[in-house]
Image (cartoon, rainbow, N blue to C red; front, top):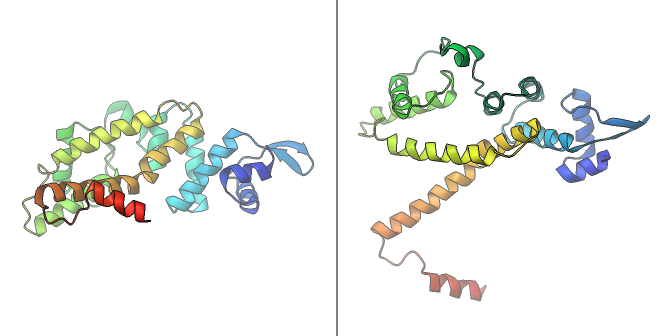
Length: 231
């Protein structure tokens, strides 16, 4: 396809595509003339991935280029590709001998409890995964408020998250192209997060209405049908 078709399929304007070509984020197409080139499906996937990393994750052009180069270097290791895309790239020596490299960041007060939860779930995760730090900060804040919610209380949520991760991995199956796999990893891990939170909020309202409701504040199916007909 020509650059105009590449632009149409990806929604990225031609000047921006040319900028990515100049910066080396997007590889050149197959030259057909002195000032023309043809592009393929890999360019489509790579361009979508570039836009997601820059637009959704807010990465700089330089950081995006480093990620794309790292993905290309890990041609046969989808686990590494997934970690790179998420910003949690497992160290090679962790996979080879199980040793965890020391973290240079100071340990948060709740990190011990976070690791207890991770161990209880039997999860194999990188020591430097920032999600563990986030979990530690939440547990510390809960403790500081005198809440009785501790890491044991989060185990049911962890089990639900474990099941969701299984669904994520299923969603990533079937993609053959490395760039298509990387694009899919961003989709299921980053772009779906707002939708998952929205689903939780919807479910919470439903459960609240069923358990604590009764004041008629939640519209019935008949009410919703009438309102829809009025529109």
